[in-house]
Length: 291
Image 1 (spheres, rainbow, N blue to C red):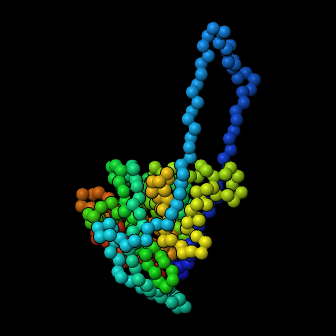
Image 2: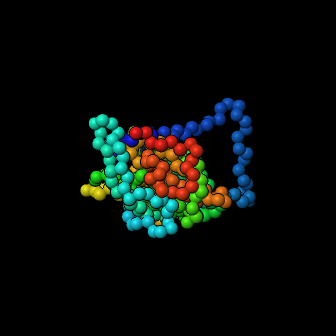
Image 3: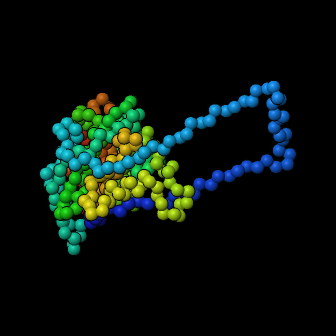
């Protein structure tokens, strides 16, 4: 995992495929055509019109900026994090850490997905990872590190309850890979907003959902929010946040209690494991950040 100098994240603008619809035409010898229509005294069969599909209203807002309540998170970071110089000509970085509650993420089927920031905006793709057998709300908390004027999400947690985890495993299906400096989590039930994209992928128009997201994430005159909440018809079903130190891949870890239930998900922002302050043994395949 790279640790570039903190900077304002860019936003992933993926290349969109052009969907082509082929129309099949029957050729010679394709078989007999339809039979004769109904006689004058026969009833004419009618087919009820399908109800018109109404596209969901997908909106975005800045996430909450309130201190995390006791019992809402398993994160216990130090009061400050200090990183040594990354090279002979690079200064070390030091700054305070605070826990910020950002939202209650609604997961109607007890599962969650993760991916790049653009995927989270559209709720597009990703593998579902089961957290519970039924509907559950995950309390989302960001450990925000502020070296100088730059804010960085050192860790982001989805907590499912106050029970302490006793062990951690890497949730490979929830790894975030990004070249836009952002990622996100969303409910598998969140409607796919990419259906609202224009037909011409060369137009540069990314649709109303992405336009609404950018207006929230990069407001004129700032300040930039720590993260952005996605909602569909008033249901909070996703979030987008800056990934640690920028572009790269960011693992997600699942924390299990003594009964084998998932009680936490942690998104790794490129910090040493000890800075999360969580209980339980770290993932066997955990890799510390490169200096």
